[in-house]
Length: 459
Image (cartoon, rainbow, N blue to C red; front, side, top):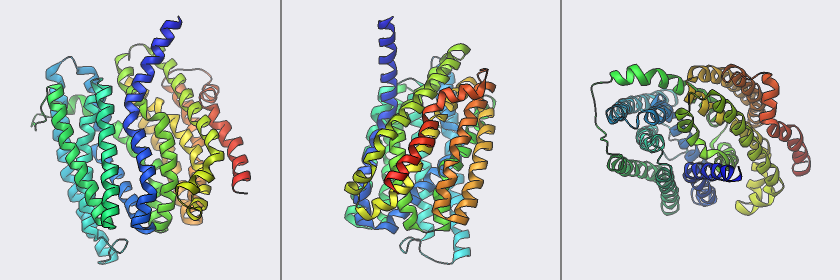
């Protein structure tokens, strides 16, 4: 029995580490790069860089959910070469079509901005058409890069995926920071990000084509995509869209209602919180293909859902509790005393919303695997509509403090979402009790540790 548990633990560590490597290391590199970028770009221009990242994240929704769809269908067709090629060719064709739509939509948005605002440079340095061109170019390349990564994940080539993602992410952060140091110009910095993304995309797709033995080619036969993939992809896209509303809309609201300097400070806090979450949950990408392979074993899927949800809640809550007393001195050493005092009141509550968000990851992966994507999308619509309404209302009325307060609302929303998922998808009795057993570390942290830490660290 001991040997069996040891083997399972070793396999879990292998899968988790290979899926998490690129995200974790890139988050660490990004944290190291933040004070350098702040120094050479300035607070407002750094805020523009963060706004650009938010727009690129928003643009990633343009893939209509093809990314997770590719993982699921490749995991189920890896032994059937014809079906595998259909999945890849259809996905590649649709992504290129969507990229063309992104380009047109971006320039239309720039035209509307110019009509409404006039010929005003963004952050005093970048023309709207230049910014939208860079966004469209980067989004298009990112969608194709995501296709390459998801093919590797779907085929179970986790160590190759981990190595490739780590290389790409670390190289991109390094190139962007180097461009900021050399040029001290946000336009050049964003151009470096766009060009490096497209370059790495080409290299990745070429490698995947050679490694897997498939071709990235256009096809006029999209019947397989329409019959098999589109029904699944549209609900995955809906999940991603509503997830974006809850995770990225806050930055866009701050940029629209406040200023880029406030966005810069808020983004620093979010970067720290996201780095913590990435370090503890980024490896979860293996859950979808693994569950897809055991889709008929409903008992295993339900049990795994409960265990992984509790694992993510406990890991994030424990890490946050340990890190909280160190936040002030670390922020001061990392940045400076002035910025640290601005970041700390944002970071303390945001960390616990990240813990709550982490508990949703296993549920999303397992629902996609067992075919409950429509339910997941509807649940996401309900959760994030409430959250978005709170963000808009509180952000408009109370500014940054209102946004933070609205973000905290995601914790009780997440708790009830776990209860509904446990009952409706996995058929578990006493859903509220089951939800509490899965997320009690997060609930304890948000209701006890957060108020205590605020009292002693903020006053």
